[in-house]
Image 1 (cartoon, one colour):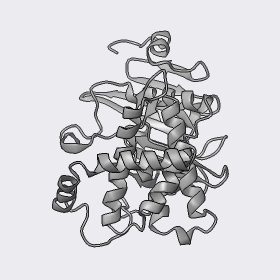
Image 2 (cartoon, rainbow, N blue to C red):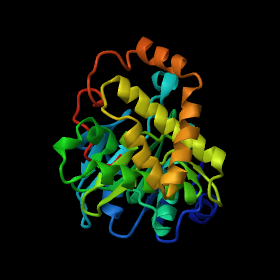
Image 3 (cartoon, helix red, strand yellow):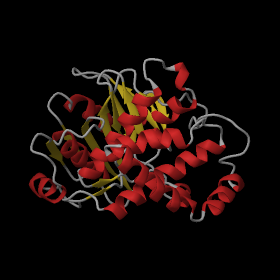
Image 4 (cartoon, one colour):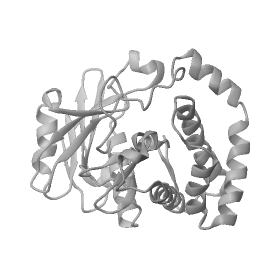
Amino acid sequence: MVGPADPVAIRERYGVPEAVELRASSRELLGFLPGFEDVVRAVAEAPDALPRAARAGRAPLARLDSPLGPVLVREYRKGGLLRHVRGRRFLGPWRPFVELSLARRLLAARVPVVEAVGAVVLRGWTGWRGFLLTLEVPGGLDLEAYLYDPAAHPEWPLRDALAEAGRTVRALHDAGVAHGDLHPKNLLLDPSAAAVRALDLDRSGAFDAPLDDDARVRNLTRLARSVEKHRLRGMPVGRREALRFLRAYGGGAEPGDRWLAVVRARVRRGLWLHRAWWRLSGQVGRARGPATGGGGAPHRVPA
């Protein structure tokens, strides 16, 4: 984007829904649903002055008010070794719009995901910064925090929470989406809808047909490995909880049992190596409860 971008070309290339309005210049690209233009412009005008609300993984969340309810703002950050080199700067400006478009597509298909309402990309001397805006889920609680202490949340029976989480992941897979970072913190319990919503769809694989069995197993294995790491940290889950999740995912006891056997076999491959790395890197050791992203509280809001 050397000069002003063409909104029509952007919409076609990234599948941005017609309901999302676009504003483009050589410095910025903004996308928003009706009613959210003011908060999107607030992010674009003062990205470093946003009020912090919580932390989601690598990135802090900001919280802004809008006429249609509180909005959470997540800035995209690099992971791994690149976080020390580029941090929040990206070579291309498109990740927020890819995620916004995917979230809107899934909502239209009645897949329970958090509601993305806007995206911002800003051009700087060393690359692009990107932001995604989502509606806050009042009283939302991520599955990771819940599973460490289900008794603290009697409004969510354990059986129901796991079943809803299983149905949500199944809906994603049936819609042709392999979540790019499937772990319990990216599944949000929504008390207002008695549902579990998927969040943080960045880098998810999206296809025009339901996932095949191998892709489903890979995604479920990613989730299972994350749970195994938390088990080593003291999360009180085991085979019973896995069955509740997978029987809901599979639509019954028999298919759920089959999924469990396949996923457990896949998880066992190289598990000793994963455990060694988790301990070496300090991710596990003594029982210490849910991660809090640098000292914050367990997530009660969507990323």
